[in-house]
Image 1 (cartoon, rainbow, N blue to C red):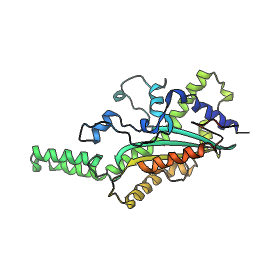
Image 2 (cartoon, rainbow, N blue to C red; image 1 turned 135 degrees about the vertical axis):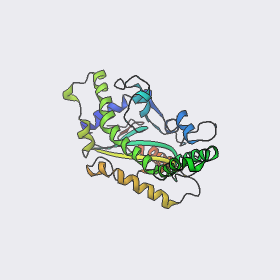
Image 3 (cartoon, helix red, strand yellow; image 1 turned 90 degrees about the vertical axis):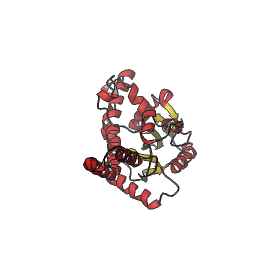
Image 4 (cartoon, rainbow, N blue to C red; image 1 turned 120 degrees about the vertical axis):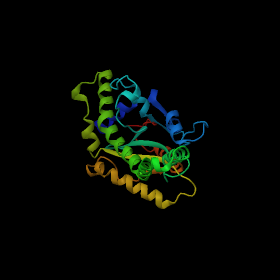
Amino acid sequence: MVNEEILKFSEFLDYYNEKYSKSSSEISMPKPDEERFYKDDESELMPLVNSDFPMLDFDAMCDDAEFYPKRPKSEINEPSTVDALYYRIISDIKIEFFLVEFKSFYFDWNTIGDYCASLNKVSDNVLDVYDYDKFNFGLDRLKKIKKNLGNTIEFSLRLKPFESLFIVLPKLYEEYCEIKEIPFTNQINLFDFFRSDLCDIQLIVVGKTTDHYSRDNVKKLGSILDKQYERLSFVDILSKKRRLYLTNHFDELTETLKEEESKTIKSLNYEGDF
């Protein structure tokens, strides 16, 4: 018999499945405004991954949530959330819950399509138009910003699992319970649930790489991210499994998940036998 809290949590996510289940490729598609920020050309937007594996589009769920202020994003400070959610029940007393973040930049921080390259372009344009001696202070500041840009992106990634788990999901759960008229006594405490041995939470960050990008750099970024998420691991919130994936690694992961789904009790995409 599957644990009651696990079933309640899975039913909560199942409620959003029909409307918000999309392929990983579709969810990983960069937003047009984000694409312009890091691309120099006006080419067609391309998904970050090529997997048809269905997950929940968490951004879309948040956009439609009633508790979000219905004002332009520039006027509010919205919580920082991951892009996709997925779960699978692997035993009567264990559910794996995946938080997935797609980042359409290169993990080496310095290729033509990444944020550092965008700052290089800005500094070059300033030098072309203005006298360096007059603007050297600003350009030096720009170089420092570029040097620390990796840490800035890392900081934004740090917030996403915290705010997804402890701000947005509880608010969505409140809305769900109101819609389904679930009394308070039958609701689960998500904070306690996430900390319990019943829930194995895994964070996956997916980014791009170039052919010449060294494995050492990938390991370095992985170590940086692991350090940031020690705060959650310390209280047994996040699994200590590997969390950094390049695009081809993610596609391999979803193929593995497809193969394993028939062996699970239940998943977001597979209705097993209880």
